[in-house]
Amino acid sequence: MAELLKTVFTLSLLGFGITALLLLLKPITAKKFPARWQYYVWIAVMLSMILPVYKLIPAREVQKIPLLPQNEVVQQGAPQELGEAPRMVVIEDTPIQEREISITPSYRIGLTDLLSYLWLFGMCIYLIIVISSYILYISRKRMSAVTITENAVLCEVKRELGIKRHIKIRMSQDIQSPMLVGVLFPVVYLPCREIPDENMRMVFLHELTHYKRKDLLIKWLSLFVNAVHWFNPLAYLLCSNVSEACEVSCDMEVTKKMTDEEQKLYMKTILDLAQ
Picture 1 (cartoon, rainbow, N blue to C red):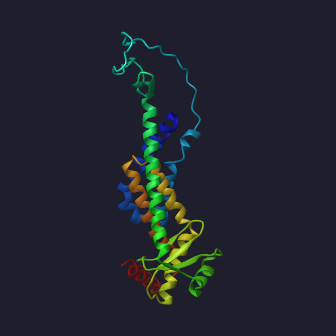
Picture 2 (cartoon, helix red, strand yellow; picture 1 turned 120 degrees about the vertical axis):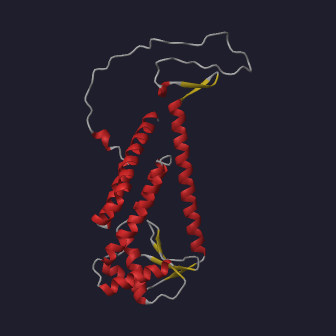
Picture 3 (cartoon, rainbow, N blue to C red; picture 1 turned 120 degrees about the horizontal axis):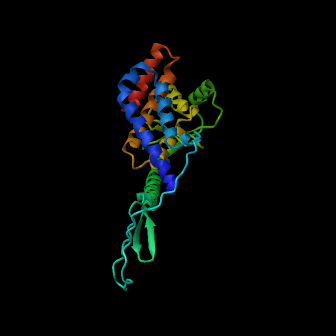
């Protein structure tokens, strides 16, 4: 457990430095590099925060000289009686991660173990909140949704993008703008309003491009990284920038082969539905 905590802190410190650097350079990189490049860079930062690649680098063997503690001071006295406060044992020249805190006269917990349990507890609480909130959110949408069995525009867009997977369409009064949910069972949610076929095509192009690029997996990965590094303030900014870069790169992917008129229609459709 102590080794795992050390690895997490090391990766978190690495991610903190890279994220801070990218945020400082963002005004420049946003103008110099395409949106897809920025998206992939943020994904690379996320992977660097959960994959300890540095451990693959072979370390040189060094001669290890055992060090004997020289100044040991142990508190001694009469045996503790019932009701007395636990006494502390302090050994000088002992690394802090190896020191122990006496909780009761018969039980001690190391400082590293205490931090490990605190980190694990925070990660579990974060995941429980995120997953339960997502389940409740989707459940409310499904309760007020109506499933659309067939849609010619969706079939046309699927053929255009080369997608053979069955994708459901649901219309809900509780939806303000279109969205794609479900990694294993994808569903496109649409607001209950009249949408012309030409605008509907733009909506499906956007949402199915997300599906084709596996963007939902990336967003869940960003949430997992955020959970592992819940104590790192820049992990939340990393998650936010991943989501932003995902949407921008998706828009660029959809519109790169469109004519000027189609691009204007696409942007107008996205903005109108967002409002």
